[in-house]
Amino acid sequence: MNDRHENLFTQLQAYREDILLVLEGITAGQAEIVPDKFRNNIRWNMGHIYLDQYLWIEALTKEKLPVPEAFRTWFGYGSTPADFTEETPSFNELKDLLRQQPTCLRKAYGHRLEEEYPPTEMGMRTIEQVLIRTIFHEGMHLQAIMDIRKWL
Image (cartoon, rainbow, N blue to C red):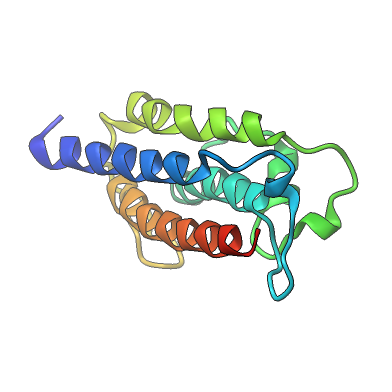
């Protein structure tokens, strides 16, 4: 793995640790609250962050990824906790998944970052480009979590 790729995974890990740090001190009960003027709660944002990285890799590579099918319904774009009709992963389960994901991504894709694929709808052709995009997206949801936390 070259220096640029090492740096990408270092950043991915660091940003994920930032999210986990923000989640410290939040209880499972607080993670369920959807404050007025918000559509989702902290737990939904956690699941969405986890799912989004895999969805974009899947969209690019067309490979089935290790995400339970129900995650797409629970945490996909446009979903909301108000739509949950069955038990979803707990706050602590989602924290564990978020904690493990950067290592899983490195192991699965660290050697494939520059493989070229037909472009996604956003023009991304490599897993490296997808991960850069998902880091930005993760930052947006980190801000959403911090905004919700202010209302708790």
